[in-house]
Every structure is written in structure tokens, then in C-alpha cells.
Length: 131
Image 1 (cartoon, rainbow, N blue to C red):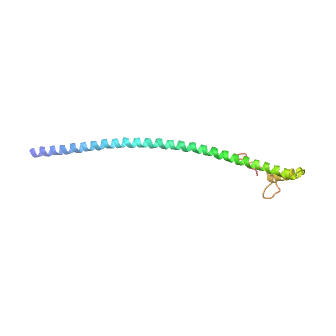
Image 2 (image 1 turned 90 degrees about the vertical axis):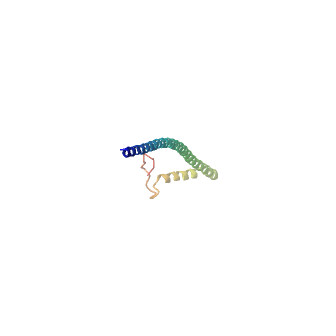
Image 3 (image 1 turned 60 degrees about the vertical axis):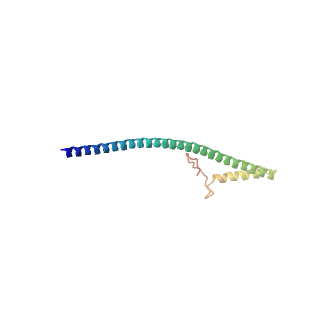
């Protein structure tokens, strides 16, 4: 009986030690999970902030690209005007020739580039391409 009692006490002691060890592991795991959750939230906030910065920089870049495109278009228009003025200056009194040349260029842009006969008469309303 004494042997059985001591065996049961030893088993009880071992089970209590195992239970304490499992409790410590559970507490450690809970702490680790809480730490990981905090890290996750921190990284998630950093990611959101980075996405916002990227979106802002993208919009700024698109705005600058738009401005650059408009400036290039304006530059092309001004160059054409300067070229026209040079032609008029060189032609002197023969302004009619310069104007006729200009009219010919405009008509050329209105005709089909392939056959050079048919006029462009179709406009895509979404992008305003002319065919």
C-alpha cells in the first residue's frame, strides 16, 4: 500500500510539473501571439502609410507629366508660329504664297495619309481621333 501511495504521489507530482510547464508554455505562447499581433499592426500601418505616399507621389508625377505634355504642345505651336513669321518675313510682299502654302498643309492634314484623296470625316467621340 505504501508503494502504491508513493507511486501515486510521484505520478501526481510529475503531472503537476507537466501541468505547470504547459501553463508556462501557454502563457509564453499567448505573449508571443500578442507581440506578433503588435508587430503585424505596426507593419500594416507602415504599409498603409507607404501606399498613401506612393499614391500622392503618383498623382504629383501624373500632374507633372500632364504639364510637361501641355508645354511641349505649346512649344510646338509657338515654333510653328515662329516658322510662319520667318516665311512671311522672307517672302516679303508675296504673302499670298505663304498663305497658300499654309492652306495646302492644312488640307494635307485633312486628307487620308494613304490614298491622299479622301477626306477624314469620322471622329471617335471618346478620344477624338480622326479617320
